[in-house]
Image (spheres, rainbow, N blue to C red):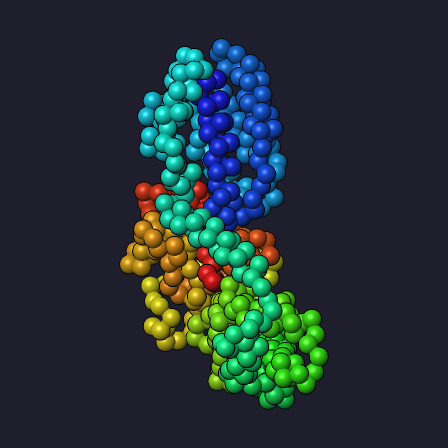
Length: 448
């Protein structure tokens, strides 16, 4: 078993390094795996096989644990990245390795040779450019990699452009930004009137967990509207020469001209790739809050529109716990069911829990008829998921192992700061959840 395991450890080392270039789809955090990890893994395997002797079989549980939890896993800090490493170990390190039909991917078998030179020759004959599928990803991952690389280049070019106004007969930067500022001021939502909001919340039940959450969200939205209105008004005055152009106003001028979100706005709100997307989202978020306060609780909630989606789900758990006498909050867990309906087809709120929409699958597609995960279509990077019924149950039992536990993130950048929760998604009978773990499948509430 020495040669096949050595070859597999080398393949694993290549895979964990190569996946980094695909960004969050490959690894949530880009770890610095290096030759020391490989050397330590090889030394461990060598000693383990020496201990086994001629009559004792390889302890695959030990091999998998040492590789996924200690040698490579020792660097890994993200739970879902650790899950991926364990998945690689399960798939690639077992008794199946000695089967002649075993392969990492079509055309990538474990070579059986007698000399090192023969092994080198076999490796040289492998394809010069590897498909992302060799690493467990979908072929669409290549589009993601090329898009990210292009975005970095364009971002660098934009940053090194001269910022000062140039001569010529065309419109100046200041005049362009002045018009944009006026246009945004005209479209900016009006302020909330505090006593009107308070009276509406009292009618709906001020101590209801969901209404407490709503009050916090409205307060935060009001703060953003205030800051944007003051910034744009002062920016217009500074361009006219009425007041001094401060550092924040200069930053706003440069970013608005480049169609980016000014730093002051971004710090108190959310990340967005362009100013246009950001401002449209501000209007849509405000529309949901305004409707909830003055018209009534929505039948289905737009997840992207919340500043604190975890707080929203916690409030829902508290609401369900209060509605069921004898339930304890620490034993109540979130669960979900993906419906066949789209947002427009929902006519009433659920009896318990909430309907949510606005989530996108990355790394997989969705079969609406049979409600389970399928492979992504070619060149389709994101798939909108139908409405999900989120509710709570009085149980702490683990999730059915046949379901794929899919993490939900606020943004494509999959860090702990962007993590919301996990939902259980059904898979095809022919594919285990491990397949989707290697695909890097996640749900995003915003793909911009």
